[in-house]
Amino acid sequence: MEDVLKIGGKEFHSRFILGSGKFDLDLINAAVKNAGAEIITLALRRVNSFTGNILEHIPKGVTLLPNTSGARNAEEAVKIAKLAREAGCGEFIKIEVIHDSKYLLPDNYETAKACELLAKEGFTPMPYMYPDLYAARDMKNAGAAAIMPLAAPIGSNKGLSTRDFIRILIEEIDLPIIVDAGIGRPSQACEAMEMGAAAVMANTAIATAGNIVQMAEAFKNAINAGRGAYLAGMGRVLDKASASSPLTGFING
Image (cartoon, rainbow, N blue to C red):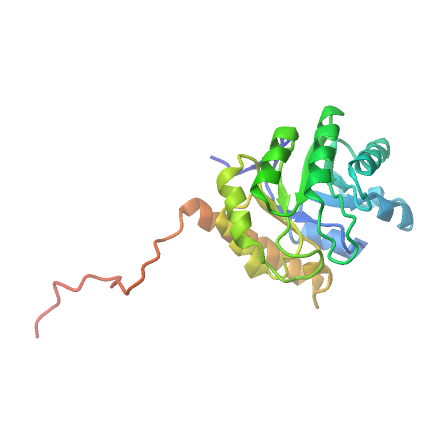
């Protein structure tokens, strides 16, 4: 059967999502053409500051995922989401509620509240959250279409600092788990996919690379490899050596 990513009634063939941390046309082109992105995150405040209409530069067929960047509580997140929908960005919404300016960690409590409010308004909520099982369950019950735990602080490129907690979400939450924020290398994206993540979101790792196009391609290949390994079933791990060839039946001589 064809391996597709299903979110909110939509199907996607790519499991790479472009984040909105650093945003320009070269990055958008590389993400779509070289990384195969079918979802692009969009911060409403960057739409307003971008020269011209940024929506005109998003290729047809790409799903916009506006986020509520700048929201400090659930009420502000709802207002931003409604503005994004009025601007023509559709029903998908990445909920991002942050009021800590030092570490930029998401507020799980306010995020769950926003998730419930937006689901009732007909949105397809995809909450960005600190990987906590109880919070993830609350968000699922509130109407989340996917859960987006951070791997490391936003823009840090530190990789899977929260891997053990993300693994718990993958095992316990029956929703797509999209690893978001902090992924810095293709190998880290591959590891996330090998764990069973549904997709990986990245931005800074590609935007700050020496060659954006080449790095976008590397992320695509790594994500596809990790997904393939997960579907194949990872090989066993032993504490001691085990011969890969039989130790009997040798030719005497």
